[in-house]
Image (cartoon, rainbow, N blue to C red; front, side):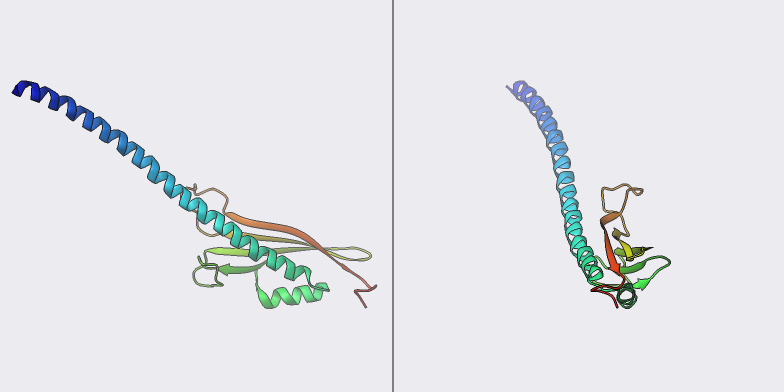
Length: 159
């Protein structure tokens, strides 16, 4: 009777070890999936927040009536970099110079025409640190907008 019990215990032990390994592998896959899903949610939330900020800035820029008014707005609202205007945000999207998690960059290029000035506006928001599960060399761009604004000379809008 004892020998029969020992044989059944060995079979049960092998089944238990095998079942434990299967559940361990399944658990690792599930934990990794939940973690990846969480960071995908964070990336999506960042894209929504960055889109709202970039679109708001683009609308304020396009509300300018002249190139001088546009430059005055940018000089007073943003930090001038070499060939762009820059603003920094912390991880909660509050303006910050210390904890710089996100960077908003505005690049302008002006094209003089006979009838007025055509300004091309590019707005980029980038994340300074990589998201988890991303390779170090991957692109950190969160959101970008490109638009144009025409400032006519004379006529109804000019002098």
